[in-house]
Image (cartoon, rainbow, N blue to C red; front, side, top):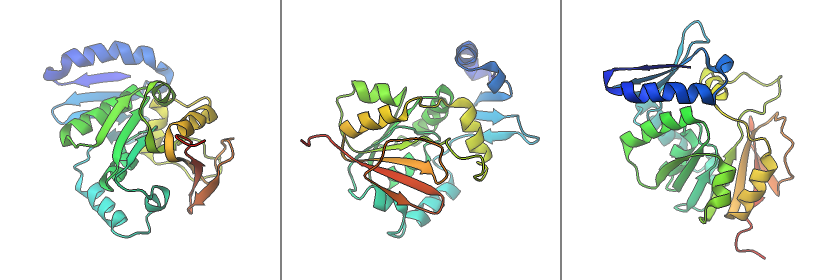
Length: 239
């Protein structure tokens, strides 16, 4: 992985060059670059003819307009999945922070966990710019976080992301880039079981419609055209 920087960021870029290249398989990330500049932190994927530039920006007008349109009615799927507004929600797989940001816009108190150090860099850079309350992120493994935290959440949300069948539609270039720098949860059911114990109302697991995952049986599912949401009842405080 290449680390680029302007003069103001040479110290951190030099440090991360050694750390990240020890952390990742060099064969997978050899065409990826991280650029530290005045605008923030940028991830560049050079695996395409036209390199893909990724920078998380929660001030993006187009994104915020889409969110306003999405949440203007009562039919959005998140209203069905998380009916108790202004409650606590843990997003175990933050990724680009898109779902977490939408849920925060709906009034939830959001905590996000992200296991990829590169995604954590991008997300932290974006969060520093907006400085929103009730919207925080931790870097680390979601299972370890839940195992050690004393906090209990109304809802826990998990998006394992990568378990589509080969016959399903291709991911976007941004999501394909995310696959290169993220780490699969080896035992999904362990995470789900622990999340159930730490949730009051429900655990929601987002999966592609043609998922290859073999997960424990949910209480029920909520389906859309492309996605299945597995619903597990929270067990905290219940006998």
